[in-house]
Length: 127
Image (cartoon, rainbow, N blue to C red; front, top):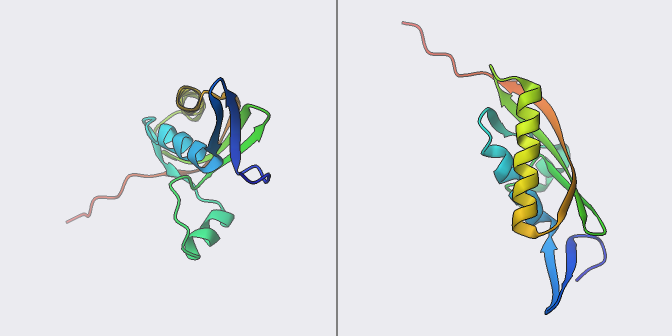
């Protein structure tokens, strides 16, 4: 495995387990999208450029950082109009923390949620 922190490694009684940071980002993205009121994840410029170059990813708008066996996750989301932002942020934090910890066995130190915008429902055409 490379030392550029693309993988999170854990020692187990039977050997080592290596988890890609992209996998952790995918878990976090899926958990955030399950929260009612989250319209979508907001892409950042680096991911947009990567997608133009042909690298597709579910985890646009998610950044994962690791220190030792603790994970910090930064999310950028678009909220649906009509939902309370602080309540939604808390629900996203809890959902992402539970999902990542239960699926990876790693401790989540923090889940930082940034609201990049509000998604309004589509207007119905008037006759």
